[in-house]
Length: 137
Image 1 (tube, helix red, strand yellow):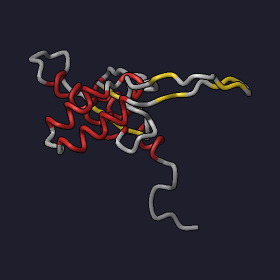
Image 2: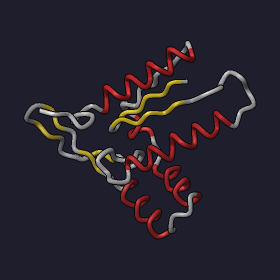
Image 3: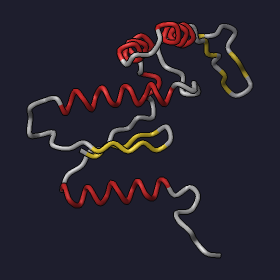
């Protein structure tokens, strides 16, 4: 079988190769765990970022309404809680706008760091891979 390019599911390997190449040149690195990032993105802040980016107010209001009215049922083994818990303080990971919201928050953080007149933060490389994110600084 003849290969015409990278195979399926090779994004992780290519991302790792790019990160290690940068690390070998820069001689230092950092990694952040974003496994709970969707749970920590406030819907109000995300809506403000969208509005600042020129999104129509009607869409941002709709997203804010959906994100702040979430309910979650707690399940354990074969038992489910009788009352749902409110979960309106996060952007749901399954939301189609979730990756966009994460990109907005990451870009805002990147811009805040690069705006500092500080030689400590010389370069920031951000590599998105699915719902995870790796940063090499």
